[in-house]
Image (cartoon, rainbow, N blue to C red; front, side, top):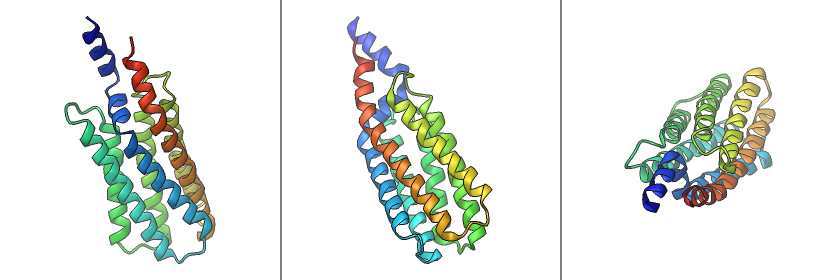
Length: 196
């Protein structure tokens, strides 16, 4: 009886199981975002082609880790589909940024598209974990930050490059901190959810 209760409780929120078991991958993604944010805040006047390459590498690595995280732990069930789709969108935008020569206006649209897609998937993922989990609100916070970045970038289409770089750097720091905090919260939430 106790075993079936644990199985029922742990599968009630299958995304929580996925994120709780792959917490270290979430922490890696947070570290990557923090590094990108610190670089962008510290060097907002770097040449545009270098910033595009930096963003492309970040998006590609972040997407790859999200895909691996979703597939690695979610082999049995397709519970981590929001994380998987977020990873696919991020990796695709990263590849696009690295392989396609962009002019500043196109770059703004690529980053806005990335922010919109990843933001929607992060908010979706947040609402697929238990309501009382801190991880839920941390994922939703990350998603709202991504959506806010999209809105800000679209509202300021003619912002000078250093301003845009600072906005993206601040976003990356906040997003990285949210992912780090979520990485710490999900294993605890999983243990709480599995306890009788």
